[in-house]
Image (tube, rainbow, N blue to C red; front, side, top):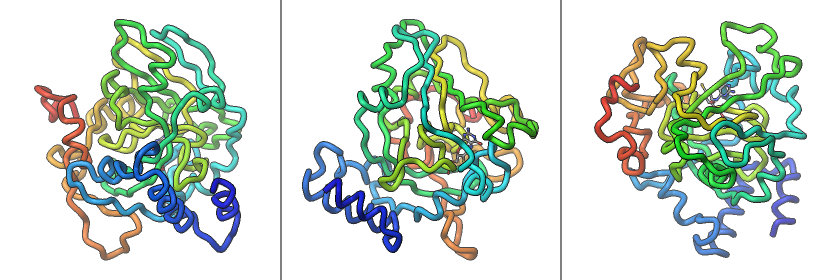
Amino acid sequence: MAHRWKNDLSREDVTPEAVWMDRRRIMAGAVAGVGLGLAGLPGRGGAATGEELEPNSYEDITSYNNFYEFGFDKGDPKTHAGELTTEPWSVEIDGMVERPGRYDLADIMARMTVEERIYRLRCVEAWSMVVPWQGFELADLLNWVGVKPGAKYVAFETLYRPEEMRAQRQRGGIDWPYREGLRLDEARHPLTIMATGLYGKPLPNQNGAPIRLVVPWKYGFKSIKSVVRITLTDSEPETTWNMLQPNEYGFYANVNPNVDHPRWSQARERVVGGGLFSPKQPTLMFNGYEDEVAALYEGMDLERFY
Ligand code: MTE
């Protein structure tokens, strides 16, 4: 089966979506939803609404991107991210961990269980997509390195390599490297994954190869790409967008249709690939993952902690 899958992908007349759908059917039949958890996936994806999510096309997902290291236009990442070398790749895991070190990505992958997760992606700019990711739960990685008592946050950094990431040569107002962070309980939540692929293929560079964070209930800017460092800390880490515009981009950045961005409404979103005249759809609280994550924020004022 693996062989057939590989062969299919190398054929130019077969789209990644078609192969992926075909493979999902085979896998669903073979394992009946156990193991890879395929039966549970639409549930995870559709979450609160319970509906099956229809993924965007591979073309949409890989040609309409935000990856400012390669430029500010949506097409720049696809045009320029090929300049990034992603092999070899290692991730430094440091701070309040039992076993700090620079881990080779291959060694990490040998220990992690990769599954498919079909998640909504809602950008703070009020557009959205549905992406069929492959990845592993960040919690498993944190358990493997061992989190020390007292750690409260996880900080993430993207690669800084101006020779290959053209916008890092121009600075462009951003204090590179791109940085993000989560509270430890958010990082350990089962919906939080480190993605290494989409549509059954290795992650394309423009989507954050070879490994990126995906936190589906938060605005897309939290889902940091091409991660090279993960640091456990006891204080809230600095994050790129929050440092740039603290009144517009908070540390939490939970998707919330009731809290507008100072310059636009967050109540609705444009679905990428829906066509120029297709109506915007309502944005869901926590991007549709309210049942799973609302408890993390119990008692918190979500207007203050935006
Ligand atoms: N990570 C890095 N390193 N640099 C970025 O510019 N953009 C963020 C996020 N991760 C970004 C990043 C934003 S604003 C969004 S919406 C998502 O990546 C977009 O992910 P996608 O291009 O895979 O859809």
